[in-house]
Length: 143
Image 1 (tube, rainbow, N blue to C red):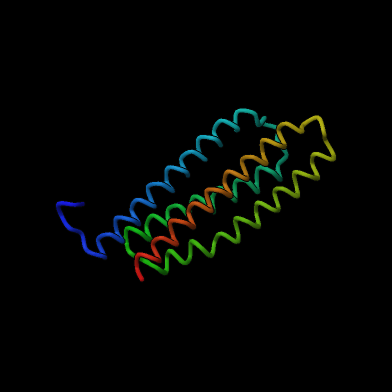
Image 2 (cartoon, one colour):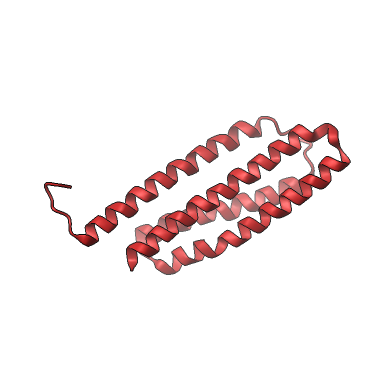
């Protein structure tokens, strides 16, 4: 950096790239945590939980792809789309939490699996938050 004397736009690009890298590292950590927790989920898990978590995972993985592409393509519209999807992720998390609370009341013997399912949902919700940080950095870069 010192040898090339970057100007303002170059520094903004470097800062955004470093933010993207840091957030992607956090996303990777959440993914690792999800894989560790999945070992404790049995194949006869309540169908409702699987459907909502799968939907949340689809939304979040799409957000990650869109956030990275918004940086690559320098597309603020795409970055704003990512940010707008965070409400859906938050809503799915609340739905999952509510469903899991109902299930724990019905079948307390499965409390560990239910808590592990909640952890997966929380990890996915955090991935959404990290992705929003990427999108916000892209928007800042393009100002």
